Image 1 (cartoon, rainbow, N blue to C red):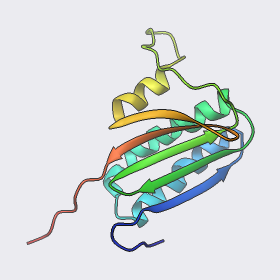
Image 2 (cartoon, one colour):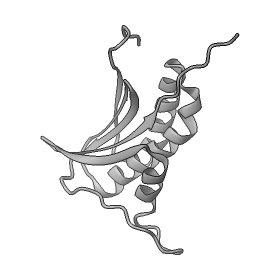
Image 3 (cartoon, one colour):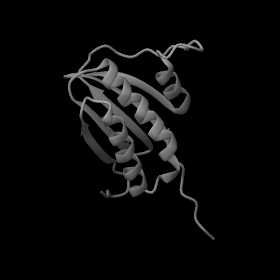
Length: 135
């Protein structure tokens, strides 16, 4: 997948609404980032993708879609058919609820959600570091 300078590059995947989708999504994101030359973002984006897809499976419903958009920043979007928007919470030591979105918020440049025609989209942005020129 290539694009001329100044244009966005977009990759998207439809995922099954089942736990195996988390692994599929992480692998697809890692492959795409490598293809775009953004290997340095793989560990962080894999974690963000895992959390967002897990939330879509757990609280969403219907089809799940993962999109990566490379422009001035890298945006990771996960959509599902649930219309209620997520709210991060500071989890207690033994509380699992809310921990994923707390991590996404800590690892992202910024994140949020928006309504869509058939549900919602939860997104997170990562800065795309400039590639150093070897001398």
